[in-house]
Image (cartoon, one colour):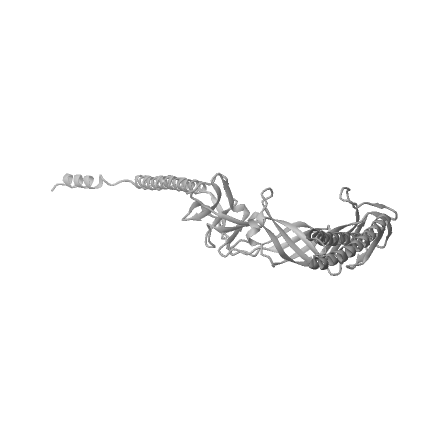
Length: 406
């Protein structure tokens, strides 16, 4: 091989080799490309992350909007059983016996012995009446009685004599019969005059006005010298008013709904405004056994012992008596009721939905209602329900759920 061929070969071998400057540039370009690729990847990753977070936010917002469309309700559980309710009904105290006292005979008031506020005993003298005309009538009646008795004795002697003579046929049968019937007529006249005397004596006894029972004089409507007329064709004038207050009556009107709970002999309590810190015991003694058509109430009488006379007739009183508790009743807050055209309803949460349940209402305690049918202690009832609450509406129960009515 020649020298020229050798040089050519050397030139060919050295031709592909690059200079150091060119290699450095190539390395820098590669680094920049890598950095740009990483940068582009980061941008893409950021874009993808932003899109993903936005999708998640939209999904969360959609879920929140969907959940917010479901109303949140607060529920309570009915309280099992009810306490025996007590009702207070107004009434007026009345004397056990309240009697106006009139004169039975006419005349002038001679003297009165008791005034208002006096406590009297049965048979005690209250007043005396002068009856001069009655006294004269009695004297005349006694004289007529004596005359009739004298005529009766003559008729009796004549009748006996004629009956003896008829046995010997000394007188006729007609004369004997006349004497016998004349005796009967004279006897009847004696009895008539005797009855008239007794009548006038009784009227004379009414000159003394006496108390018919133990009690309190609440009125005196006469005075000395007052004219007293007791005839059948005249209007009598009340002399005294007597009230027996050892026992007082209180009449109350019990609403028809409570009428079956009224039992004769049941104990009650009575309060009066005049004695705000005291309670008096009473007993239901009788009732009318019928509902008044106008007031739809039952008339009930309660007797209250008043031995010391502290309670006065005519006072305003309240009678408190307990009603029997319902066996299967529950108590719910009054703000759980829904007033609908078809009747009272209560919203009960069952399976996440509202069930409008009809109920049977018992006693009203103000902030609570007795329910006698339709609910159980395990039901979850909605308090403060919306008026637009519909049956089957999905609801969410608040975490403020209570276990019982407070």
